[in-house]
Image 1: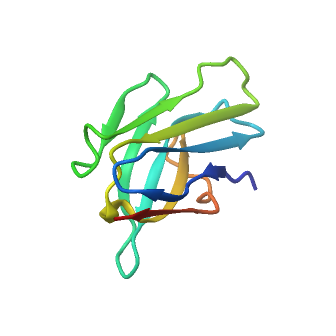
Image 2: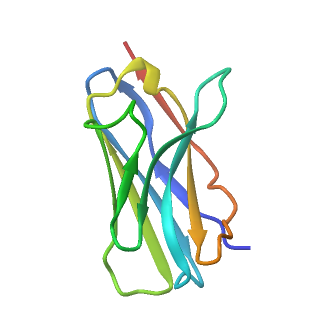
Image 3: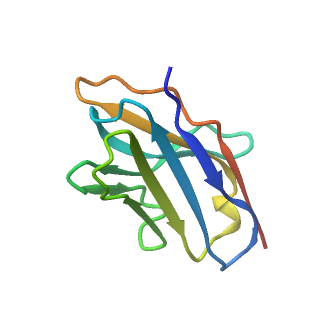
Length: 121
């Protein structure tokens, strides 16, 4: 089954920036939304940001104004890519970030493998 593949993240200092990427390859023409969740240590996974195929974006209140989600505008129906630009990072942004992708009809692909982001204060 197709699974999103993530890259980016790592250890960053508070106030700095980093970017996450997520690629879905294969039969992707049916994907209409992609985005990110995150899970901090000891907490439940929470929504971070999403972008639809018509470029409508949604953000959690905690990241509005600091994070920007975007996607590739390529015509390659065999690949879909989404990015999460994270600026002004805070210690509370620390966690494992997971990419998701949803298809028309409401089916979701498996989660991405997860990417650790650690913000040192």
